[in-house]
Amino acid sequence: MKKYNNYKPSGVEWLGEIPEHWEVKKLKFLGNIYAGINGKKGDDFSKEYSEGIKSFIPFTNICNNFKIDKNQYQYVKIDEKENQNRVLKNDILFLMSSETLDDIAKNSIYLEDDKELYLNSFCKGFRISKQNVNAEFVNYLFLSTTYRNYFSLVGRGFTRINLKQEFINDAYTLLPKLEEQTTIAHFLDDKTTKIDQAIAIKQKQIELLKERRQILIHKAVTRGLNDKVKLKDSGVEWIGEIPEGWEIRRFRNTFKLGKGLTITKENLTDEGIFCVNYGEIHSKFGFEVNPEIHKLKCVHPDYLINNSSSLINEGDFVFADTSEDLQGSGNFTYLNSKEKVFAGYHTVIARPNNEIISRFIAYEFESLVFRSQIRAKVKGVKVFSITQTILKELSVLIPPKNEQLEIVSHLDYTTTKIATAISLKEQEIEKLKEYKMSLIDGVVTGKVRVF
Image (cartoon, rainbow, N blue to C red; front, top):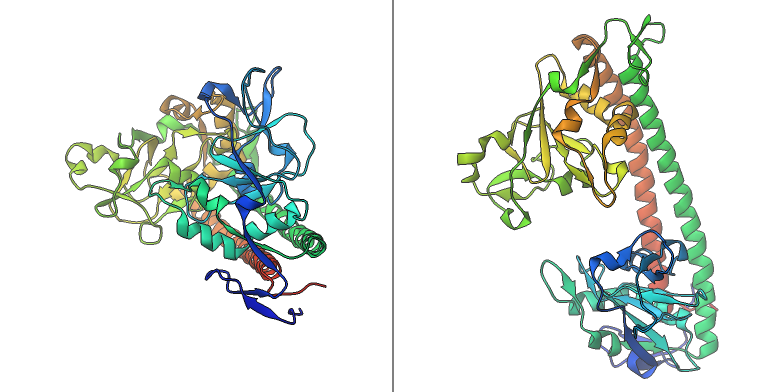
């Protein structure tokens, strides 16, 4: 791509040189900043629409989208007499609080025409008032790597990163002439849309690979590997027929159950005895955790004195006892190491008897035939609980031990091939995302000329 003919110092160290005819102005001279909704309690918010409540833009909508997605609104109770700021078309929205430096001050532009729309309380909106400024260009400017690096330097905090309003207002904005801003915004709209479409195709391919994996697992753990095997009625309507020689057992007769430590995040440290908590289970390691590979927080060795029952052995399973959605109900991991490891807070331990190969059962726990049992029994609205009582009543399919080994060998081979294919697609997606950000940064900071 081309460069501009002449450059000049921007006067701002982290911006470097800019095209000679571009201007630099602080954002506060281009419009006005405003706050999100305030004075609300948890019960005032909802993810589902009901009569009388109002739409608002949650911080996740800003964090995950360059442009606000109207399909990702949430809802809040707002009285007509309340003095709350409304979001208008072309407003640029910023995250003012986040869990990581990477997300602080992430921005997104609102381009719809909703009559009444509000903004999350952890966010700020900026409304451009100058006629010679294109809001979409400014949105791309603040999305660039150069500005993301700037905000990561001025964010403050440990467990949560916060940004003062002044760092938005006082951020230096690069301004070509209005016609050039518009040309750049249209160019980036076209290019980023094509990149996003390529990413979406690869993400669809990943979903198809994951479906293929699930089909392979389901077939292997419910019918085995021999298509000609003689079948028998399982006696359970939703399972149907199973191979002769296989058993159906209650979970309570197959596993010894226990619970993890009664601790909170504040008890976790960087040294001591490894601890697997429910957050790590939901973030998934595949379906196994190995402390030699995965980064786990620890608890002090003193916990061993009165909590040895919460230690897990090689081959033991650990279920998260709560989930924020039905899909995550039944998420688990199992220990594939002789390392000393605790089951952490909000977990249930399941220790199999000697007739069972843990890796076979791990595949079964991943299958729809097992997960559907859990989803039929758990109850909840915002949080779904998976209790020991629920687990005890579940059914598990148990083939002879030699068949378990054969199935494990087969699934390890086939799922590894699928995992490799998924990994390659994910790498391709990351490269496309990196190219997208590099393109935006080069164009909006004047390093690249697009016309």
